[in-house]
Image (cartoon, rainbow, N blue to C red; front, side, top):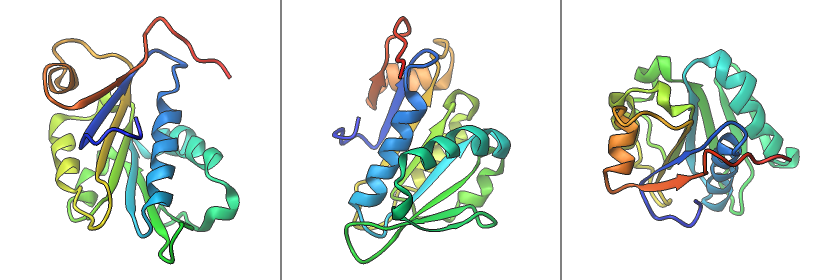
Length: 171
């Protein structure tokens, strides 16, 4: 997943396949690897994000790398390998207009089957932060063949990360 040069990547799998963990580890890696990076961690609603995906992200980030966590602004500043800290902005997809003017290096959407294709296109258009590897990442349970995610990733040219629906990662 990390080595893929694709602009957008989708990881689907069953419950317990490590989808959220994969997004969080990749978000952390891109933030630290590229000093001054700006990323967006998102999910359908703020309560769902803060009680699941954000908690998972904070479990993976070593506490000594968190320079500041401005909860009111929903921004985490991370120490990087360079002089410039990276920013991780987090928020809900139900407020997508808040992100229309951002210059992002990466974004990660958990439970992406809840987002619309218009939301996806808005976020892809935000991947324009200079000097970093751009990466849009989605994770969800498998969708139907009628869903836009299936059409875009299984019938399109984007990179796909897949976990077998029969496998369950425990640990």
